[in-house]
Image: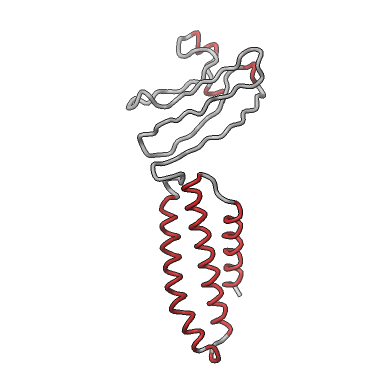
Length: 182
């Protein structure tokens, strides 16, 4: 962060204000990058920022920096949280297509199961152990895809991922991978 702070030498040259973070403005959009300054009062050890919505008009990767250039605040601990939401929900732009992918793969495995399980049941006496393994892999994959889909759907609507659903998705994935390697 020291590379981004205005030094006395730069301030004397008139390039920036001493103690401020140096950020170059975007020549195509003078409002960006956004800067939301917060200041400590001398007697306070804590400062609270009020929630602030920043409207982003262009798609792309965005980074949030929390930094201080005041040498008196060296060693300061900064705690906080940011909430990112797209027009369609809370999923990141590169993750949103995965929800549709998991739904379509789940549908494909359900169709596969509807074709596979009656055949296995019909020829149960003639089947070999491999058929049972394939059946279990199909069941575990359906469960894994269902949990992944609902994990993404919940994350997209609520902004948080439920730990239990994630644990079940990982557990079923591990069981499926272990079984498919037998």
